[in-house]
Length: 177
Image (cartoon, rainbow, N blue to C red; front, side):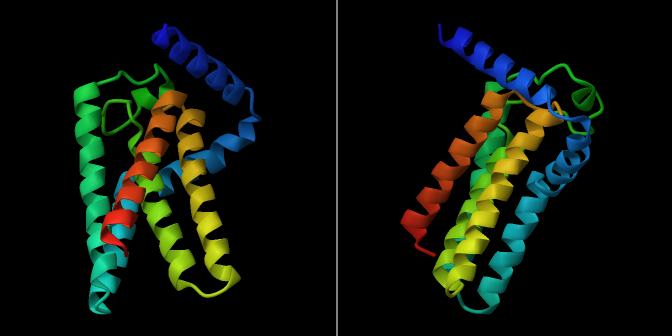
């Protein structure tokens, strides 16, 4: 029963996305490349190093926790071991990993959600909120891009977003950056 619901959801969303105009593929490839886990990890390291230099240890610990969370996501992918969609993009991937949950969606969400929180907390006025909204939109676009390019099923992306948001909330609640 659950499997049927998942297959129906994945099929419906994938069919919808494949009906989008072809010009959308180029910006989605750019977003998927900018949103890859290595880039998100680098962003966390840069912010963590900056925070460490400025004696903002809770922010440094938070960015370290983001890296640990990204590792946990990798372990989940390894043990769940869902096969990726049979697409040209997947056949040309350099690193072959499992599909569930999406590492791109997870990494983008956990990093961008933490940075959005920091933006609202530390950037004064409206700009903090503008930054936060932009970061969350970016995280959502990274996930969407993974379906558009054919790297993931939609449920992989939804799971990545939810897990990334969950870990971001844990980090914010327990480390209090």
